[in-house]
Amino acid sequence: MPFDPTLMLETTRLVLTPIRATDAQALFAIQSDRPGMRYWNHPAWTDLKQAYVQILDDLSALEAGTQLKLAIREHVDGPLLGIVVVFAIDETSRRAEIGYHLAPAAQGKGYMHEALSRFAAYLFDELRMRRLEAEIDPRNVSSAKVLERIGFQREGLLRERWRVAGEVSDSAVYGLLAREWQDRADPAPR
Ligand SMILES: CC(C)(COP(=O)(O)OP(=O)(O)OC[C@H]1O[C@@H](n2cnc3c(N)ncnc32)[C@H](O)[C@@H]1OP(=O)(O)O)[C@@H](O)C(=O)NCCC(=O)NCCS
Image 1 (cartoon, rainbow, N blue to C red):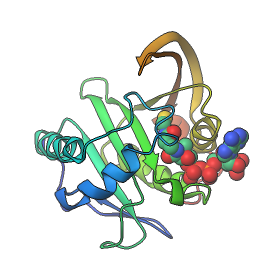
Image 2: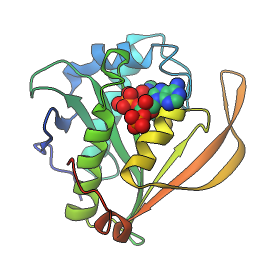
Image 3: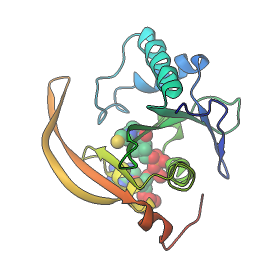
Image 4: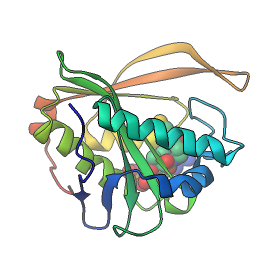
């Protein structure tokens, strides 16, 4: 089933809406930043065309209902600060994987905690997901902290899973169950 292209998730400081073609330049700035791409699953982009191709794919996937990528902004028409994405959606098992990325200038302000908390609420409470997964480079300490603060548990280590720009890296696999989300001790902030 297609995702709603008019979806809007709000938090105290942020607004999350589906990524749009006009975000290409800003997405390119984020995904071409080498330090920010250190632990990503592909090398930093080098050509603006890569951003346009990616967003076209994202919009097709939104229509097909196979992936939902939301832009993170402070205001509905403000600059792109980052993204959250859900993909690898298994309808039968009601399971999916999430990814996330903030522009360097937006990091260190607790924004991803706020954005991911709201996104998880949408995925569990509205889409009725039963399990969310995330795969991160275990060296990415701030990413692990963001997941653990929301309630994700580290479930395992996949050794030497990736080879990106010649560098081989491990993956730490995290999972969060709907029942754990419902029972979490500290529900705020959304
Ligand atoms: C990883 C990322 C999502 C974190 O989001 P953020 O909003 O900047 O997170 P914060 O700055 O609030 O940091 C989260 C926690 O990590 C801690 N932290 C940050 N850098 C750290 C470091 N180098 N070592 C140890 N802890 C660190 C912060 O103090 C904070 O801890 P707290 O929750 O106990 O206060 C963001 O930095 C990002 O998008 N990075 C680039 C892309 C990326 O790596 N994406 C994830 C791929 S899986």
